Length: 171
Image (cartoon, rainbow, N blue to C red):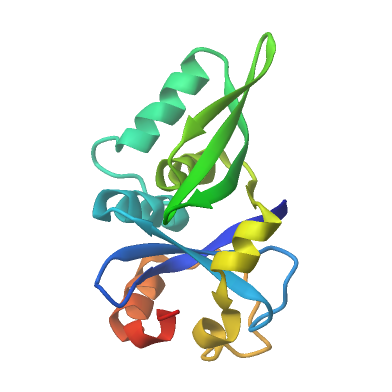
């Protein structure tokens, strides 16, 4: 497993939203980014979490976090474990009074929840290797001086989405 961060949200060549995950330890334009297709609501929820904004009404992932807090549980980590027939699979590890509990979950929900819970996100090495796209395709516009901290604002993500070329993500 390799620890990753949410690099951003983009659109693929079919206009579908994708979350881009990048290994934490990699320098700009090095290695691969993992694109995971998500629904529009999950993309919006992820953008809200990344921006640190509070929606006027709780999103589903805000509710999930509130429920966990209320019952004394917390998200220890999220793992994107595998891909089968084009579908990514993830697990959420919860810390509960009796120890740890691992739940099967969609990566889109898991990532949105992990961001709210400030929990680490991991991807299986083979998933990143098999499904990753070259980071240089996406990060070529960034300069070496920039500090890639994954905390870009919502406006920066909107700018990225507006100017990303879907052909960059063709495999």
